[in-house]
Length: 369
Image 1 (spheres, rainbow, N blue to C red):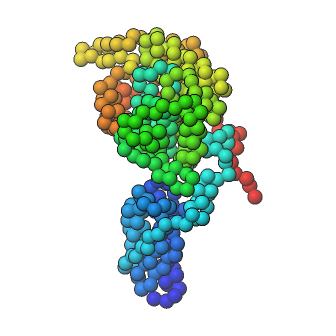
Image 2 (cartoon, rainbow, N blue to C red):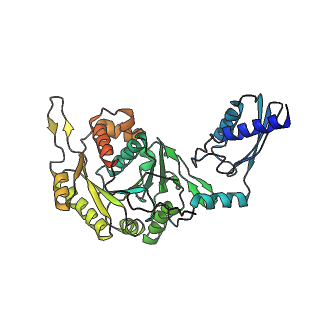
Image 3 (cartoon, rainbow, N blue to C red):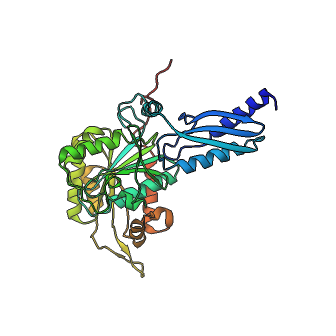
């Protein structure tokens, strides 16, 4: 093999490594400067691979994919991978590149659509709706993230089936776990099981702020934020941090829940956020004879929508499958799309895929040379 042939084969191996994606950062490892020297001598490929951190949870996956990609190049007969770890300087350079020049991932210059899911009242299925909606949007081809802002009553990790997951820290950035194609972050990923969170307002604000700034979501099409019940500290903080967000109001049909849900929407409007629409959950339970048992009454969703001057986007029936999927961490929109509740969420997904605010005239965050 001539030197030119060896160089050509080395270049082919490096190109093949460009198809290997870091499972946490979701970018090619060649773009992340994780690939060092690459050489091929008499068909034997040698590759220097630098992981982002010591004990990287994706280490085995990345090394396996690197070996597979290199071995797929015609002319390569064996692959040797020397695995190391980035230096502090390399890691700092990587995090700076990932952050970019924007001061906030989801600031006014972001093209990510931010939807806050609020109810004002607990126990109406807001978190279950958020989890299923996120998974359905991801399954439709969008890049989706979820922030569990319900610090005291976090439930998103369990609903997505990642109750024991822990984020990975790369420099100053936090890599969120991924479930069903959705990147998710929650305070439940940082505390021991069964440990209550008892914080005052400043700590709540700092936590939400850190989730939005220090967690690396990458380029998202949609970010869903699961709000806690009520109109207190977290709602106010999100009004300050995400004034451009749209608010999805969740209520049950009963009048008491509808009145509280309306208040949460009014608080959002006071901070400049817009009300996207209303979702009525637990709308009824289908009976074997075809009738519908209205356990929580009727008309609450339509009443809230009318008083807010917003559309009623969906009416989601009571469903055993929806509840069982939440308990099992297997969203019903994936396991049983024909379930009545799943069908209603999927129809809502189709409506939300159409932007209510056009992108025309929005800055792209790039500067031409």
